Image 1: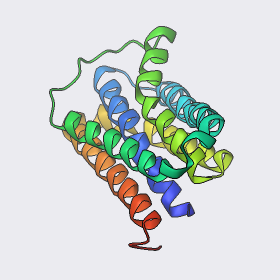
Image 2: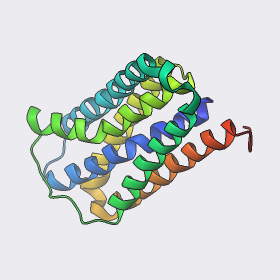
Image 3: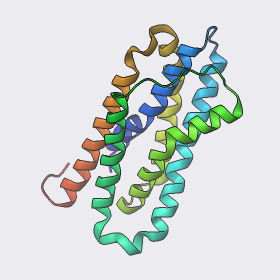
Image 4: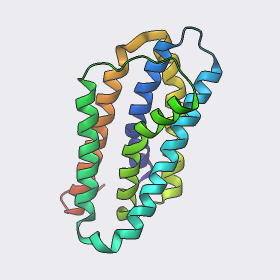
Length: 187
């Protein structure tokens, strides 16, 4: 997979964390760089860790599903992207100004579950997981840190648009993987 493809996946995966960061920014009355760093470390760290875990799981079971790996990658990315699009049209989440361990841990896990599934896909596709996980984690770190400032300044105006864009990107990448494997397109 090309660097641009990995980067687009990283951006798509980071959109949930970005959207939650916008909400966190909305909830904070007096924002400091510490808030952005904390959100970036939690979200970026989990977005780094989950693809690695998914990759290890996928690699372990690769021999069982090698013939359908492209379909699995497509279905997982389309499902994750579809859920993100659906959420973009749903009601807004409750605002929470708590930055404690329990709250941040649960939000980081919730926003990175999709990265676990992508990691499984990476194992089937032979993607260099170290490069991919570092790129996903770093992209999420930066976008989450920026998201808290965006939320604090601009409000919830962009949250649903970020989720919608992320979902579309993931579906398109899944379709690209499938179409390349079927020999319909090549990039």
